[in-house]
Amino acid sequence: MYARFVVSNSTKLVNLKIHLRSHKKRKPHVCEICAKAFSERGSLTVHLRIHRNEKPYVCEVCSKAFTQLCHLKTHLRTHTEEKPYVCEVCCKAFTVKDHLAGHLRTRTKEKPYVCEVCSKAFTQLCNLKKHLRTHTKEKPYVCEVCDATCARVARARSSSNFFTVIFSPTDYESKSSGIHIHPLNFLLHKQISRAENHRDSGDKAIYTDGSKTEEGNGSSYCILENYGIIASWQGKLDHSNSGLQAEILAIEATSSLHRPIKIWTDNLSSLMFILNTKSHHSMVQEIQTLFLSHKHIHLRWLKAHVGYIGNECADQRSYLKSNPFFLPEPLSYLKYEIKSAVLNIWQDNWDNGETGRSTHDIVPRVSNKPVGWNREEIMFATGHRPFPSYLQSSNT
Image 1 (cartoon, rainbow, N blue to C red):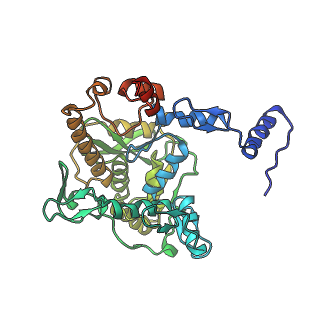
Image 2 (cartoon, rainbow, N blue to C red):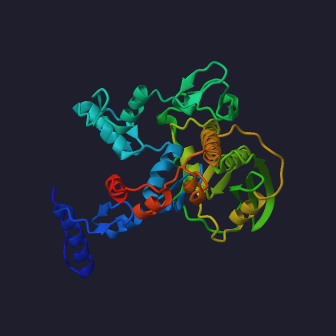
């Protein structure tokens, strides 16, 4: 396969020169912190975000942040359960292209990831990491009732304590198993779309919104007709619930009206959730069933905060005080709680430890995020130096 570049102007000439570096293995752009080299300046700029702990791309569902937009788009598929990469042999689908590549290795019997302890080989790096726990005996989640241990939060099926976090399965979302609607009967693409352009025409329509506030997550909808509000509703979820849950709750509340209506939402993730035939979310499955039984209900997407009257009205209503609704907390919140508990224990040990006091004066707060220091700054802060230089300076 050959890469072709038509040199018709200076921009394409630059692209050709950058491409040629991949063949000559030239990497002129070097990171001053870790000395990693890159062929393009843009790649170095993205890499520096790791050292500076810059994560400008944030997930609307679980608030997880990423250094690159492509990583956020891949992460969103874990919420929408979208799987665009399909195996041509067995039709199995994957959210990430690398996972499809790993799946194809099971057919070619290629196993490039080898365990250094027992030489066992794997088709995917993630499987090697899981295997290494059998050697390290790492099982961080321990049940204080029966002393059972597990390596993943989702596998905890009974009430237990993780560090200082009390876990009860009934408090968190549980995924329903199996497909509740056969794919041949899942005909929602005509009712749900993001392609239609919105216009404030004065026709009757419903606008939904879910907003995160200091008091919790607000959920609301407004019914507009002739540019005036004729009905509205709002509810309040706990701060531990997600913005996506608030948006789904609003859509469920509007769809239960059982009237010919067009619903507009500014949350694309919730729309993709409802369009997913394999969704295990119980509220999403209820909405899917309701939509299939009421063909007159249509769901559309519109851009947020661009001046649409109904959208702005629903957004304002979501911040008002209202009656609380109780929904199971997402597992992402449990992971957040466990992470916070671990950091608190680590911070306590760091504050009350006997070693590293000079470093503690400079870095008093612990974090699982890398510090953007170069080699010289680390040596200065910690007092540690390269071993040969240390011997030379001490005349040993």
